[in-house]
Image (cartoon, rainbow, N blue to C red):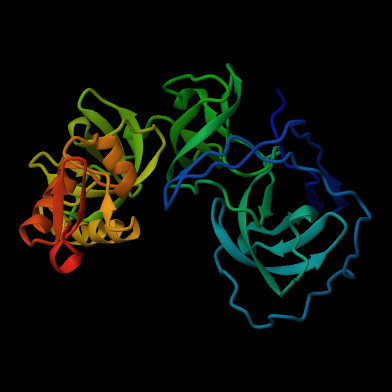
Length: 357
């Protein structure tokens, strides 16, 4: 299996322009992303095609587009960051951008947009020859973020190469591997810049990167979490790329998928700093909005909803996105207010909310 690499990359040298080679996978891939600040891998993406010398028109050396003059440009571009870089010139290989202390950085021709301004928002990384290059694409995870990425290729002596949304796959070094999974598997990793090699790489040793400082989260605070691993009690989830919490199996209607990104709520922070999470708000604070949601669902369904005490937790979560326990609490509130009627095989509107039958 061939690993996708950057194509058509050029390096400016005192002697002129040097062209780098590469190759792309013959297969195609399809995007599959997770939600929020934390992201999941794409099973695949289209293979990259190198730009051909002479394709399209080029600006004369030193010429800069006149649109968007005066637009603010990032003053401190860095490896692994998105920066707005000024366009210096356009050549056959692509655009050369002002990388400040990093020097001139090439944006390969295939990433050059049709409408050029004075500068471009780009991500800076290294190509297969360890040269700094730019892309207008956004990786599935930035340095400092946790993500679920798919293994594209395994090389036992080096590690695994992960699809992170760019032409060059991300290296998971052997020393940073834990599961040693095969090609096609999804792994939860943290993306970081290795200080020794100055490369962007991944690590499966996620515990090493977690924040051990006691969090200042509030009870019932809404958070984005990434399901990292299964435990005897439930699922360990990374909270906002910082801390780790636990989603208890007894609170879940269905099993969770590793790498899944969810909205969760802080149920409790224990004296030892461990965080309990839940997919529903705690106590009565969840009942009022859920009660309104149930009434609206009944109205939308024509005045009756086929959910009842015998419905499975999965059926209730599929219909309303909440646990069976939360559903029963909200139905109880509505029943006491005479806003609905409970029947053996469902619930319907009653009282001020709808006609009694």
